[in-house]
Image 1: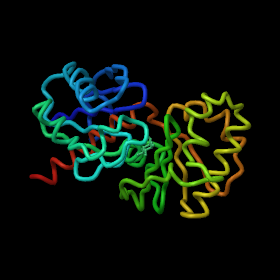
Image 2 (image 1 turned 135 degrees about the vertical axis):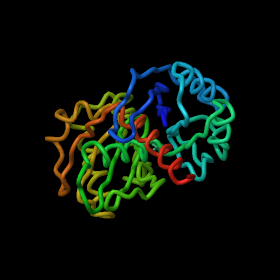
Image 3 (image 1 turned 45 degrees about the horizontal axis):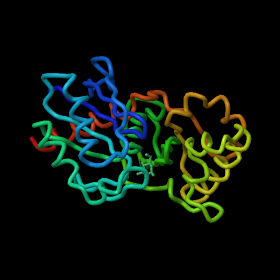
Image 4 (image 1 turned 60 degrees about the vertical axis):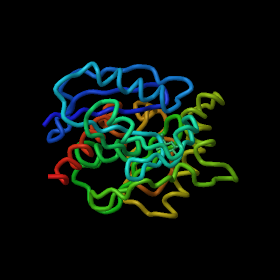
Length: 249
Ligand code: BGC
């Protein structure tokens, strides 16, 4: 069975076929810019454009930057409001003519890191946090995902955490690494007080620059950078699709 993974991000929609046993892409990734506005119809078009680059796949896993329950998108913090309560899995599946699994972007990236990357062979409570356009969270207990946690929206100093400490805010407010790390530290300390995870895995584009801010963080929990970088969402989405195919057999 060949599975395609597609990652809908704030700036790009990226996809590739994935070997879900090994957690590796089997062909080069293809990317189109995320449409602006990122309403349902335009994003479905962008996903179809990515999928059209590949042939011979049986199923598709797709990430979405919001809450996804039973294939329906239930929140739309950083995307067009047309996504509220959209039957995403059904819409993608009708367009691509294949079974589609849709899941939260941080859940997908975290699942890939836990299975194949920085969280491999780790037990206990592990937390993936992605710092990008927003802050995404994914929680795993002994490798099992507790889906749709939205810890990027915790309130810190009276503000939604992602409006204080996402990478988008670092860029928009032109914050120094010191200033931004101070905000990230405050956020991480709050999260560790609430959940006491064994490990934080940091993903999102900024995880490539972890050497710039990890040394500035004074927190009690071990913290590592994601290792699959911009492939994590694609791999995690495909893995989820292939698991739901197994369950359907
Ligand atoms: C959304 C999350 C998402 C995160 C990263 C947040 O604004 O609420 O569902 O995982 O951004 O894209």
